[in-house]
Length: 379
Image 1 (cartoon, helix red, strand yellow):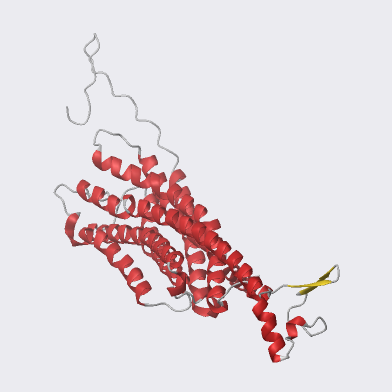
Image 2: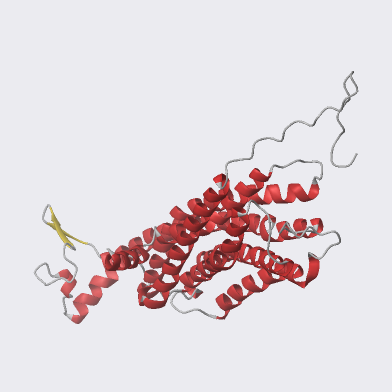
């Protein structure tokens, strides 16, 4: 039938003229909106992730192993804004028509898959790092990056490139390729990349975070039990009869037993009905060195517990629609998905790169202080 059905002939035999075409859409309506949205999003991603990288590089207090993972995530999002989004915004501004070379299209698709995958893998790597910090806190180095963390960060980028590399090596060069469209051409690769980039790391990340919550809960219960046992043991030893026998034999009165002696711990001595009660806050933990480290980690992980639901929720909210639509188009050829839906879920996935700096820094006082100093320089 060619490009359409022929018109029916009326009774007088004259051909029925085709109906007039629909009036064209207002010039530049949707395209201008995409351009404005793209520029704003690029500025937010570059500004937020740039501040994250700058803060860790310049502030000594922020040079921790956990923040190096956050910098790796920020670099992935920063490169996405600089290398992918400008070309994507240009294509959206053109109404989805690709007017550049197919080689540049393949480069764009490769960078898009690689950097989006690297962003997701970095989120997963952060969950692995925090799980290790909770599982073996005394052996976890928070002040200096070690081989384990270097391997984890390097593996994140290597795997991201491995997922994206088939595109740049010619996977998109299929017969009858439409040069006016820039998209992934192989449906099997779409399924493969979606599974590797989202449907595997996402459950892994959720399982690790759940395990971390359980570990923190058990850790807190064990810490409270040890604290009660330490106080009981210290008080029992203090008032054991052998302690007083030793004092009589030596003829010395310890400073702690003299109510008039100077105390380094104000409020330790309390008179109750003429009887002096002695308390030792400094005996809160039996091993001060290890205890302080455990308490410090516990405090930081408590903060992580408050932000993790926000992180996971934002991640799922931004990326789940994209990958569901993405894999549905590849598996269901009869499913008609409007281009507006595809465009919307793609934009939503890119928005996550702007949210990451906010989520990972707004709950950290050290990052907030740095951001305030930078803002004061320009305000």
